[in-house]
Image (cartoon, rainbow, N blue to C red; front, side, top):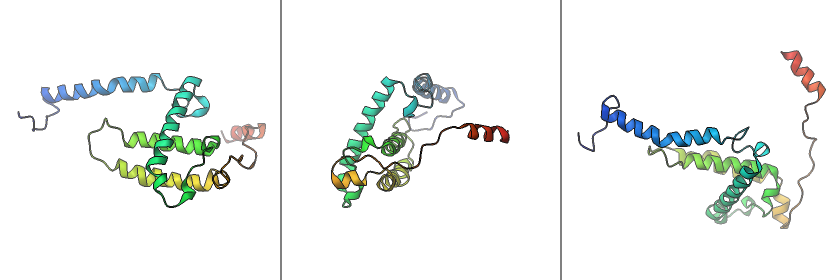
Length: 171
């Protein structure tokens, strides 16, 4: 059999190649489940301090890269993030999600060609930029060049007795 021939997964050579692939990914699978924080590795509220610090640093690097790669090249300055973006919870959550989607799209473990990179741009990057521009409450900070606390909206949801009773009645 030449190197160019496709391996038959049911022959010993094909099974050996499949076993090598499994051995390559198995450590990542174990790490993913052993190191997972309650709520997942990107759920800020539940992360242990050391994991939150690590994720915070990764997010800062991602945002710096994204700004230099994309936002400095846009003609519309309203897409630029103010320096205080990290003080806006909506921005932190949406940029974390964008970073995670970017990692998945650019995952180098898959050698198969796909539309993942195009999908990341059209289904994640640009919609997130539009969302941040509209929803994150940063326009005042960007326009004035200094942080302004987001306006107080309605009160945050709390699990009240009434809420719990209503759920009990539905069971």
